[in-house]
Image (tube, rainbow, N blue to C red; front, side):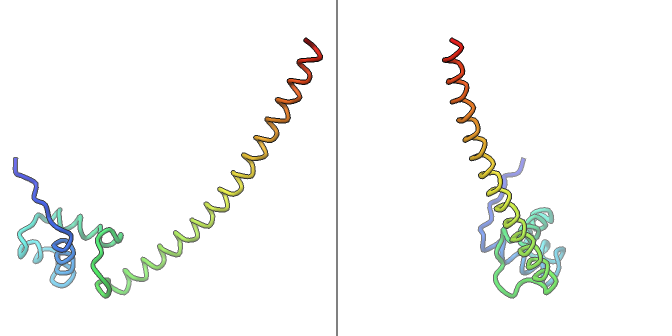
Length: 112
């Protein structure tokens, strides 16, 4: 089995930039890395896991990232609202539980 080669972040960043400039096939041949490795880095660059710096994205990728950010912010607000509702419900249920437990203790004393 071959030993797994480690690549530093700068190498990955430059490999992704090169692939965008000259194409994945040419970049793989020039750098001597597996095509699957470069493909993984390209996917990570698209999701922002590998920062290729400003100006390295195509306009449609930037628009897509802006849309994803907008959707994520909307989802965060929805989740925060839902979280507040659940916290309020949990607080109500705790108070109701305490109320019924107190009533049960009182009624238990009368019957016992």
